[in-house]
Structures are given as structure tokens and as C-alpha cells.
Amino acid sequence: MIEFTDDDSASSGAFTPSELGHSSVINTRPPTLVPNPQGATEMTADFVNGDTSRVTFAPQTYSSGHKHDKELYSNHKGPRSPRGSGHGTKEKSPLLGPRPDVDQSGLWNSFPDDPQFEGIVLACELAIEDNVFPERIYQGSSGSYFVKNIEGKIIAVFKPKDEEPYGKLNPKWTKWMHKLCCPCCFGRSCLVPNQGYLSEAGASLVDEKLGLNVVPKTKVVRLASETFNYSAIDRAKARTKRNIYNRVPIVGKHFNRIGLPPKTGSFQLFVNGYKDADYWLRRFDNEALPESTAKRFQHLFERVVVLDYIIRNTDRGNDNWLIKYEPATTKSVSSNPNDEEEGWDMVDNPEISVAAIDNGLAFPYKHPDEWRAYPYHWAWLPQAKVPFSKEIKDLLLHNLEDNNFVQDLCDDLLELFSHDKGFDRPTFEKQIAVMRGQIYNLIEALKKQLSPVELVKMPVHTLQRRRHTMGRTRADSDNFTRSFPRRTPFFSWC
Image 1 (cartoon, one colour):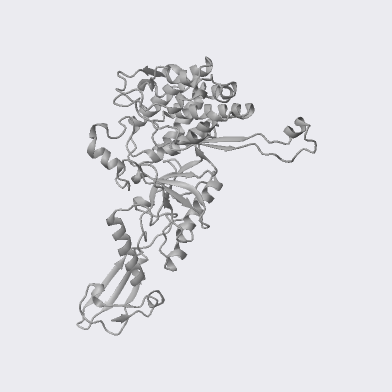
Image 2 (spheres, one colour):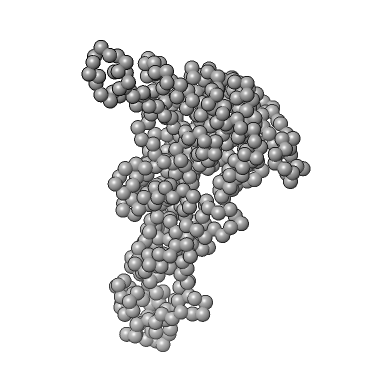
């Protein structure tokens, strides 16, 4: 056995010569650590038989954007959080951030333009470091998790890419049975596979760009947690690295990452006090809303319609958009019971708001044209029969008619989607062609004051940019070719 006498190794205890790959007995002189010209570190040990053994460690690098990495490693901590930057590994390449022509050496999960959101993500990371792990949501057909802060309060919903309904690490077996028993109807052929996390973030981007404010803010982040579904190999690798780190810190501190690999996914802020729309819609059938509240709800409903139609959401039922309803409350009791007017003045109007969640099955690259039509279930509601209001027309029409505004929206989506390692530009252009066709129909419906149900009955089409006009001004509406689907889905009601 040998005992290290230098500061780095003294705290680590001892290990046997076999751990150095040599079976001889080592002299009493401790090994020496010498930096070589390339920046690496060489450890030299002399043996009784005259042999010399050398072990070379790769140089440890630290990103310029994360100055405390060196202290973190010197304190022998194995961080679970993926926050940080590295070099030469795919795990440590920022998913979102600057454009490709800009240096991408910044931090993961860094959003300089939204410090409040970044603070929430940081609170989640600190909670995981303190063993407050995300909790799996058992509803639904994919791996999604309630993310908590250090006090244990739910602050967001995280949906990893590889645990999506058709992801390779989906912890729920329903989609596996679907694929096994009914392969002909497996999946949605109109969607890009395993792109749900981008669809969630893209829906939030469209919502924010149009000023709809019905989607809880959603961005793409990377998180690592023991409660996520990892393969046995990933868990074994993490366990081995941690054991080496604990037994031989001088070796372990050269690992690029200690612990489980971070997962890329959508991070959506949690909304409190909301229930499934189906619950409140049934209540509203029996209990009529006050006129002002009903008008407010109609405006919010139209915003959900606009969002779903533009992104062509293929999974919108009344159970995956939410309503928050706070009944009227009385501030004080009137001193004169016969004075009804004074009593009503003391009553606050009911508050109502909506949230469009579960947007992971949107942005198709073609309109559904095989087995199912994937209709919008809100089209059967009585609110869908009311023509679009002047409020939604004033909010949207000016921007949607501006080709420059629409192109800016497409550019923002390109920046988001292009960070996926499976990104394909021609497929993305098809997705944008579908969205442009939806926007075209929506403009016509707003101009003609149609209702949402009349909007969904309009013929669907795509607007594809012509190749020979790619370099011309983007404000020219003649640069697009209009195409209609050649066939319709077999089932139109599901």
C-alpha cells in the first residue's frame, strides 16, 4: 500500500499497486506529479525491481463563462446539475443561446433576456443538489415530471426529449403496447418524431410573439436527476465514476462529468389554481356566467383557438387546456339590506383565465392525410359558434398581414428548432409551409368575421416558398406556392 503525501492525494487515503496497473511493490518514496509541456499531468512511481511507471492525466479545462468550476472541482464535489460549460463533449454543447455564427461558450440554462425564468431554473437545480428531486407525473403517455424548488413547491413541468411518447426511454408502456399491437396506426405520421420538446417551446414562442398570453412560459433546458428514467448503462457509468471519484479523487477530478448525464427537454412554468377545461365547461352548462365574465372567457377562448390553429395542434382535447375560475366574492355587507344597488357594488366580478398546456404534438410537416384527422375538440363547444370578436381581430390582424412579421416568427422558430441534433432544413420548411397556410386561412376568417367552427371547415393548404425567389424581398407575397392535400384522412371525427 502507498500513502500520498501531497495535499491533493493525502485526503484520499490509500490504494493498492494493482490500481495503478502494476503488480510490483513500490519503494517508500511517494509518486511524483510533474506537468508536461502540453499541459497534462504525469505521475511517476519507482518500483523495487528498478522499473518506473508513469500515468498521464489529460489537462483539466474550465470555461471562461463559469469561473467557479475550478473551485468546484478542487472541493471534490460531483455536481448533478448540468449548469456549466465544457469542451469536446456533446453533453456540454449549449442547446439554446447565441446564433451558430456566435461563440457558444456560455452557460447552459442561461437566458440573459429573461433573468426571472433563469432564476426559476436555477432554483430547480439547487433543489436537485439538495436532494429535492423532480416527481414523475403518472398521468399521460410520456415521462414528464413536476419540478420543485428547495422548499418542495412545484414550480415547473419538465418533459425530457428521450421520454416522449415515442422516445426510447419512455417509462410508460402504453405506447410500447400501441406499437406492438397496432403498428399500422402507431404514431402520428404528420409529425417529426421525438420533437415534442421543441413543439412545447415553439408554442410558447408563438404565443409570446402574438401577445396571446395563454401558454405558460416554456423554454428548452437541460436537467439531471436520479428520478429521471435512465438506461442501465448510464446509471452504471455514473456509479462507476462516482466510486472512482470517491476512492481516487486525483483521477476522478479529471472526469468531464460526475453523475448522470443531463437530459434535454421542455421546461414549462407551473400554473396554480387551474383545472381541466372539461370540469369547468360542465359547470358553466348548469351555472350561467355573468355577462362580463362570459365575454372575457370568449376572448380567452378565441386566443386558444388562434394558437392551436396556427401551430396545427394535433392533440387538443378539453382535458389538456386549463381554466381558472374564481367565483364572485363580497367585499363587505351592505348596511341597508333593502339597497340592492349598494350591495351589488360590494361584489367583485368573477375572475377567469385559461392556460393552453400540452403543446408537444404540434407543428406538423404536412396536414393529416392517413387514418385520423386529429380535430380540435373545442370546435364542438358553443363558444366556437360565435364569430371572432373585434378584440382578437385588433390584436392579430395587423401583424399577421405583415409578411415581415411572419418571417420574423419563422426565423425565431428556425433558431429554436435548428439546435436539435436531428434537425433537417427541408422538413422544417415543410412545417413552416403548413403554418403559413394556417395563418392565411386565419386572416381570411378574421376579415370575414367567421366563427372558429367555420375556420376549421375552411380547406387546408400549405404555402411553400419558391426556390428561385429565396433571395428576393420577403415582403413579396408572390414568392409562395399554394398547395392542397391530395387526400383526406380515413376518419374525420378522431
